Amino acid sequence: MSIRARLTEYVRACFTGIWIESHEHQEALTEIAELCRDEQWQLATWDIDSGLNIPGQSETEASSSDPLAAIRAINALATPDGTAILVLQNFHRFIQSAEVAQALSRQIIAGKQNRTILVVLSSVVQIPTELEKMFVVVEHELPDRGQLEEIARGIATEAGELPEGNALQLVLDASAGLTRMEAENAFSLSLVRQGRITAGAVWELKTQTLKKSGLLSLNRGDDDFSQLGGLIALKAFCKRALLQPSRDDPKKRPRGVLLLSPPGCGKSQFCKALGQEVGRPVLNLDVGNLMGSLVGQSEERTRQALQVIDAMAPCVAMIDEVEKAFSGLNGSGDSGVSSRMFGTFLSWLADHQSDVFVVCTANDVSKLPPEFGRSERFDGIFFLDLPSQEEKAAIWDLYLTQYELNRDQCLPDDENWTGAEIKSCCRLAALLDLPLVQAAQNVVPVAVTAAESVSQLRSWASGRCLSANQSGIYRKPQQQARSRRSVNREASKN
Image (cartoon, rainbow, N blue to C red; front, side, top):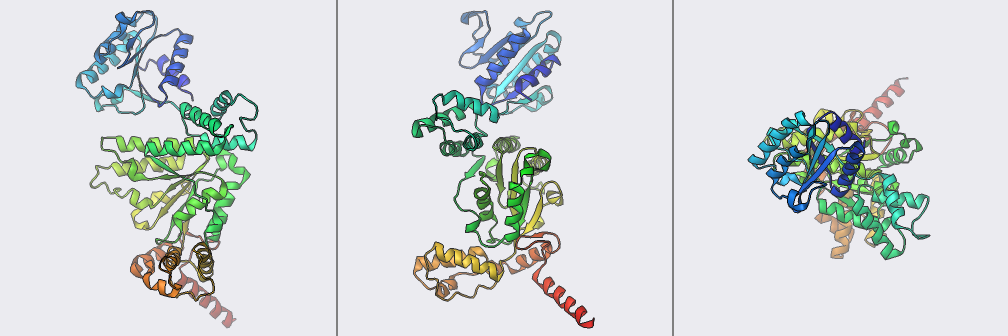
């Protein structure tokens, strides 16, 4: 629902305190002004620079930079049968003052009698506790694909400047999640650089925008599944889910996967390669960057990050080592902030309707609550075990080529090695100009340094998770061997 439709409902229902969260104040003001003109409502605006602006009054009569005077001035606009709206821009800067908060409280209550509406227009929601129940929050949504296409056509006025067909869809994919001004800047930059609007130039500006926000980072690597050995079943599952035509139906869209494994088995690399393989951007959500110093700021930044992810659909959202990201789930030490952030994230996982494929990775399942892995939050929970001998052969071949090493030399004993340890051995061999066998002396596998943790993790995953290497449920290697012996004994009896 548009900001205009929501504001119409709230004003008609006489909500006298409305908080509009928007990063595009001019666009929001234009929509509000058009609504007031159509409904014949009186409109006044205020900001600290221009002061109070009341149509029909001169600047000397109306302009005042005093926030208290602006709040009180709305009563002068009241009429017996009409509605008056005062828009206060960036008023979160003043609302923490006791005098301003009290004046707002008094005016919101009085507004019920004379239909005077206070609208706070701000990029953040920072409502003092004593005013929380008095305000209703309206989100000014980012432009959709239709609006972005309209902006692009308004800028690319010459023939050949705007692509058509699939190329246009790539441009719209790249610009999803940008504000109207950011989209205009990106399209204009592309025209200046290349004479036409391309997705590449838009992605460049979009990467800078995400960095400035500090909420998300964008991965635009070139590695696809051909640069990742093993994980045959996981690759096939995700690729089929994301490339099926039926995913365009909102009821049939894939939700994502939870990847569990010991460190170094390729979880993070898989996330990055998945985006390249299916042609989607990979957004990395670093929960540590969402933490704020003010009360309620962490929860607000979490909601903002999820809104940006929704706006950038279709995409892949990656949360690496999710059990560490929400390490304060027991409520100790952070007054329950991590628990509230985690609750917001869980609700979004289950309820979001956007075409976002979520990939979460974890090394320690004991720190994750049971509700995290329930059905309809993920399409599957996969366990990435230590690679098999066949998978290790593919990984060796990959990194021997990448580091330009002699392929005829002897390979070291790689029992219980992960893909990361094979890469480390090849990198050290290239760095130190050593044979692989000598370079391997500097590698201690995680299956040795954390043997107990790895064993516990494999035991927990056995029978509970899908196998990333072969179709079906994961079984711990010892259990597989026992199952084969049992089958052989039964066969011999028969």
